Image (cartoon, rainbow, N blue to C red; front, side, top):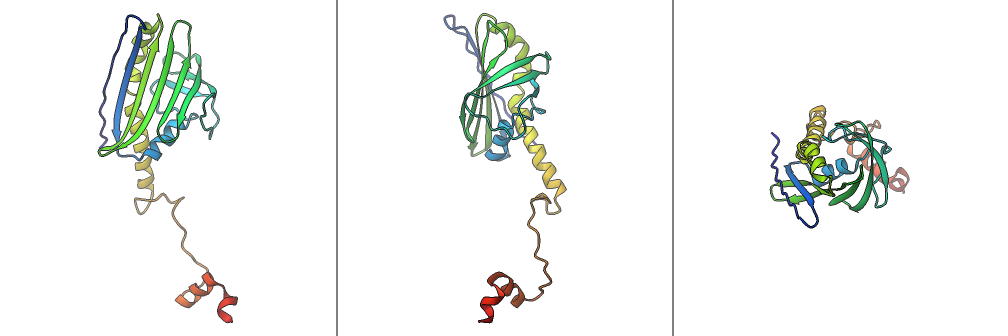
Amino acid sequence: MLSFWVRFVHRDSPRVRSLVGTYQAISSASVDALWQKVVNLADVSWHPLLASTNAPKGLIPKPGLIYQAVTRRFPIPIQIFVERVSPRELLSVRILAIPGVEERVTYKVESTVCGTRVSYSVTLKGWLSPVVWSFIRPYASRVAAELAHAVEQEIQAMRTSSPSGVIAPSTAPKPINNGFQDLLSVVVLVCGTGYLMH
């Protein structure tokens, strides 16, 4: 059973006029597993807001990288600029969509006593931010939970497909089968026949 919890924070300053939403989920998946999903820019099938990107498979996000994405609600391309990357901790990007709004998104992954916490924060600034927020808020509120859910599903699928329930068959160590059946033969194989004969 998945365990998620969500927290939303909203601030609206009359001087800066910014909207900030922060959502969190607790998952039993490891920090590494969640982080690998976050930085896999080519696969956004789990993302409630993004439908696809033009990022090649295996691309590692670095500050300064710009790639393109298409949203689910409106099938128009948007530019995403990677601002900051702290491996296994934080990924911060800036969304370059339309004039009149500035959007920043931050993913955080951290280990806690209750599990791994993944946070998704959105900051909107500009005179169009209230309008944009009204459209994306229902989807933004699900990002952290969907991320954790996708990773846990993958882990469960790997365990199900493995006979031992722990290691996937592709990564399981292969047994030694070279025709040696006794202990002496194994020692010969490891240490070298020539050494043992001297």
